[in-house]
Length: 531
Image (cartoon, rainbow, N blue to C red; front, side, top):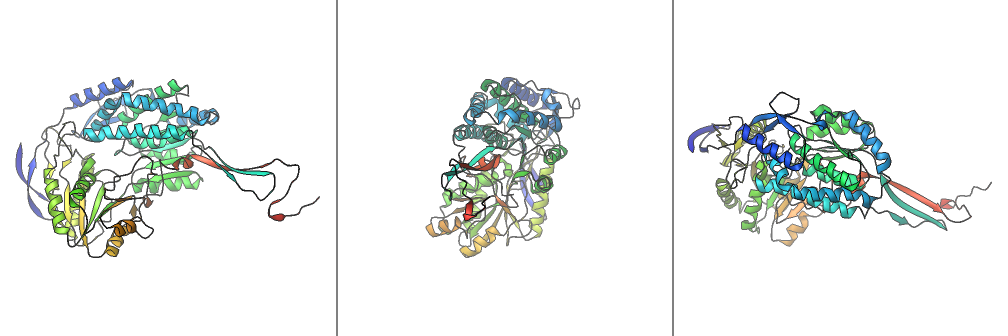
């Protein structure tokens, strides 16, 4: 079903808008309830207003109801008190034994992958393959953490004193708070929780207030894994609520580490509170990511990478491609080919098997997208493709939109701003030095990429005077962060590394030990102190 319409984003353009069929509240509620039961959660979705925890689906844009069980009533103070008590014994459990919790969690996730993916789809609107991919990422992190539980190693250090042994050891840190965002409602928790638990730290999870179902389902799985491993059932807890709950976690001195994923606005709110009490924080605060398209780029490869990176998850990933810097000799061809790809994208209900782009999380996200596009056109931008909202006659509150491709004459203020929506700004460059300068001239620093077959350009991009981001990829989009790499970014992205590589050290405290196995007491640096 199609209808003609006109939308104004700074100027009027002719568009064709497709109507989208969505699911009713009753259908979505039943599907969500079935998934919860399959997973083994006691959570019950009731008519809206019966509890304070609302469930909304971006698929139809409506409140599906309210959800409650015994976990939804836990306060921050109660959770931190329990975590502090558990820590006293959990830190003494050998790390490989702690890893058994995560091994069992991996088993539970494999068994309930489809049901958890259903909930991810219903709550955040991801297409099926992306929802399944997020659960698979949880499984992969579990495998990584189980192996890591046998590799929490220290060092033996050369000592200047004879018959002394100087060592570096790592000890459990304490309760860890995890704040996660809607765009990865379960994987982000897994990145943190899997490492924290094997490192000896109980976890308190504050999920996005937009994703209570996935949080309840995941908590049911980890509690069952804890029981199977003989660990305390509350080694991982969940607390629900708005920003005030996150603020309470940040302020509690018993929370040794706060790991927060989300907007820079959220990071600016919680980080100073944690720092004021000399607590630790891990911040991964989204991004405004770019790709450079060099003259030698393989465009068949690049266009596919660009389209997935910019339009996947409706442009709401932290690693979403937002800026495309193209050599002036190829910008017309790139714009033409990307526009063609965009026009072929299937936008619609994520529960439909052929959909490639689902909805924005809510109408507020659509308003932010429209505002950004309006500013872009006012700042000299030209809409090359997309930007149209799709009608959903049965769901007027749903925010379906075709990804926007906007050609800019320069990198203006709106291009440097973060907008979680499928907007791709395209700009040209003439020299490689100019491309690097444009790439780095934004406050964010999470992910980046270059498409080139020139070895010197590739090596420069990944060097000290190349990309200033935490992730710098070659011939793949900015979303190519693998499990073993330390995921995180620089500058306003926060500098944190939640998982991968040696990220486990953030969840532990380092201790230096000097052991004297002689009968003498030689002092360092030749100091004499005879008595």
